[in-house]
Image 1 (cartoon, rainbow, N blue to C red):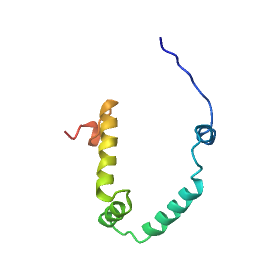
Image 2: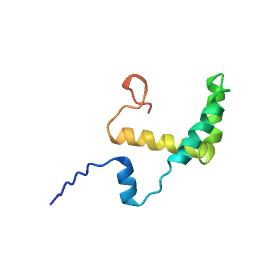
Image 3: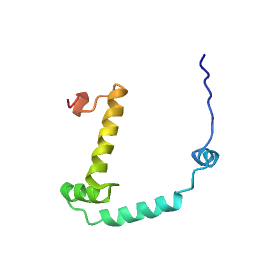
Length: 88
């Protein structure tokens, strides 16, 4: 037997219901820091270097996240390469 439950609530209501903390202020500070850091970026290589340094767990975290996104896209049948072709 399957039971389908649909709950209509805002993200704030869901966060509160599940007992998760409000990280809005921390997020605002992070966005402000990133905005200031990105003002000096003048080319894609420099942007890539900033992303590697600021990503959680550095390069390993960035690669882990990339693998997670690619795996999710493949599981959903979404093409991951340019113009709808797989990179495999």
